[in-house]
Length: 326
Ligand code: SF4
Image 1 (cartoon, helix red, strand yellow):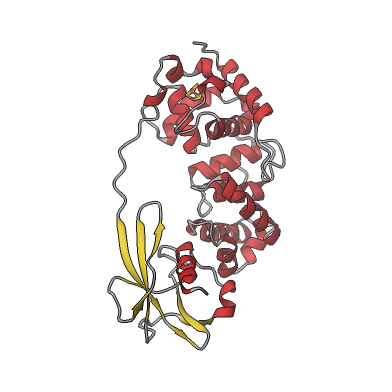
Image 2 (cartoon, rainbow, N blue to C red):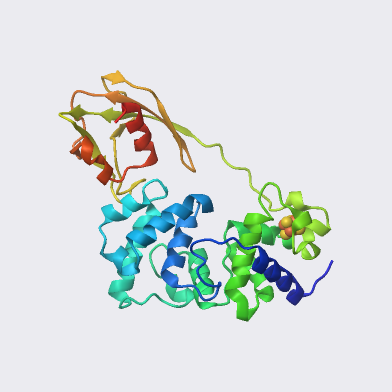
């Protein structure tokens, strides 16, 4: 097993130079990227696959070419552009952070990890990713890919961001801090994948403790997941004169700010339609749409069917709409 720090990062960076994917947010080498598109892409990529993010990112950059455009948009516009991408809290916090930059930083996005962390929605990972990819700051951006790769490379049992950073930082070349982070992320995405790592094609195989000791399958050590519960609800469908009753979910609720059908735990009177199923990260939901004769909820609005496209709805509500054949 080879132990040279410089050789490990060199092998990783050479592989990355020759194998990195061309992605729309990689408009400049890591370490010199423009901040706003990097920020948008990092937020969109949280919990979401690259292939899903690409069309959203491209449309978003046309719709909101600058952070100022985000700050000045209404929340409805922001959610509409995010519609279908899920985890809507990310979009609301990006909107809030854009307003923070405009109001508290005279429009200038902070240029270091510590200050970035004070913006709404920027946790340790996103702040470190922006600081390293845009300003080449020598901080470790430990996303799920990097945690998995590090756990195998160094046979780590503890996967806190702090422990990962302490392990990887001695290997991070100061002049190529952003490149090093992005190369590790890419290695995790393309080679050292969760289920089928391609060790034979891995550029850092010689330095990988799990591979060299034949323990790749033992890392990362994964705690048993709790069973995902399934909720059962009824969607209240009230239609009249070419309009339909929808409510806007409160900002602090799940799917906050989005419009949708009122949901009830109690079955209302009315004709039931085909059941709709949807899965979120922590639970599943099965919803029976029921056509009711009265509105049954206080808050909401009658929305003309031909205006529905202007409202941001969750994927679950789109599935219910499909059952109604609207
Ligand atoms: Fe991952 Fe295998 Fe490479 Fe180790 S040798 S970093 S387990 S792909």
